[in-house]
Length: 226
Length: 302
Ligand SMILES: Nc1ncnc2c1ncn2[C@@H]1O[C@H](COP(=O)(O)OP(=O)(O)O)[C@@H](O)[C@H]1O
Ligand SMILES: [Mg+2]
Image (cartoon, rainbow over all chains, first blue to last red; front, side):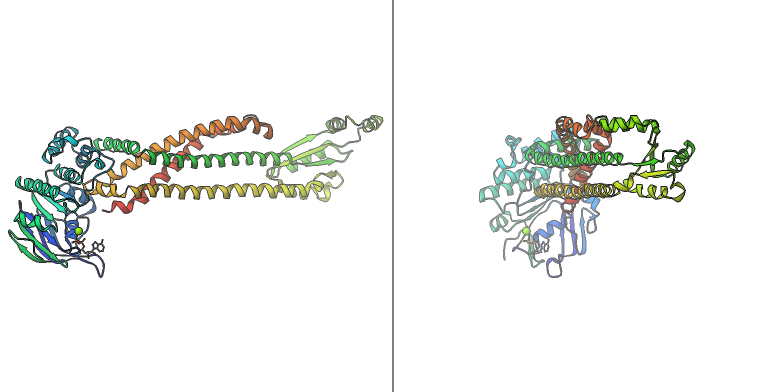
């Protein structure tokens, strides 16, 4: 599903994001990516959604080489990969429903289908009763669930989460992870970037540890160890 | 088509949900339009005044008393052939006498002594108007040739030369000042609008990034701003138009008296309405779209 071949990302002469990493993720896998701050986890996420381009190497997603993806094709890529972030990235001036609908509207999805899909994904994340709320009226956990709902509307094959629980307390964090597990059970490949030891250890999934832009550990059913 | 309606919908939603920002933008645009209109008025008035002043300047050529009609005709023809000459008016002896009597109707001494004379002592007069006051010099030089020395008794120009020179200078300077003022205004409005929009877009840079991250094309991000620009331009045009209209109603009676021209500004605006509205709308729209495009470019690259 995802293949990185000798990928490097050099931001400036001195600032290295990723240093020659190779990695393969199969369809339906749940992968935790851990590592200290500044080791290139977010850089990896940015390469996957073409917010940045690799300096070297080849990056394939579902057989599509996106290492040199054109500016015009970027929106198409992003409609096939769901992403969620630590800071939720919701549109503050739009309601929950509008935020989720937006991802479909910009993709040219017909109105009827939007009306059909949006309530369903809101139901999956348990927010059916907050349809008309604005982000400022929601808790952190609820905001992250809106973001997940939004990332699901295109039925993505891959969901990338960059520290989705970073701003949440343990209970809310746990809820978010449960939702991610549920989505994974439906067959979506999940890349979870985190540095929450408890979460990683409890998941018992594949763990990739980054250090200074390089992969130092890659273990099936691994644990968090630094 | 679907995407156009969605962009339209987003535009209206943005306007309503960012109502205070929308309000500020419209106010800035209205202020800019009012300054442009002020400039239009200043221009119109100065143009009018300048042309009035120019019209009132003329050179009178006083022919000697015993000159034949053909000689005068010849001079008139000669003068009219100059491209600088706009108008020539010929007053024959009788007309000059009548005018002379009219100007001195309160002075019995002069009238009496005139009546005592059997013959009309005055010569005919040729009044010459040129396009620009400074052209008079050329006309005078042309008339100061030896052949005409005996025909032309005198020319008023000699006395008024200084005045004409000064008026030429003043009107030229007024025209220049208005031009510089216009240019200055254009530059200032550009920066004010550019900055307003830059700030507006800076506050919305997060939104722009989010929209791109969930797969929106540039058109979906930029489209609502363009439509908002059109709507804001339209609204501010209407508001500025109403204010200008009200001010004209108030100003025109006074200006009419000062300029000897009734409804001067109203007429001016009526005659140039399409040009003024078209240019203003074009300028405002172009400014808002170009500046928003410039300001947004950075944030679209995500
Ligand atoms: N836009 C950027 N310009 C320059 N350096 C950057 C940029 N983004 C990240 N970096 C650098 O790349 C390295 C990896 O950053 P990042 O991927 O954000 O780390 P992590 O998410 O693991 O904390 C860091 O040293 C960081 O300073
Ligand atoms: Mg990070």
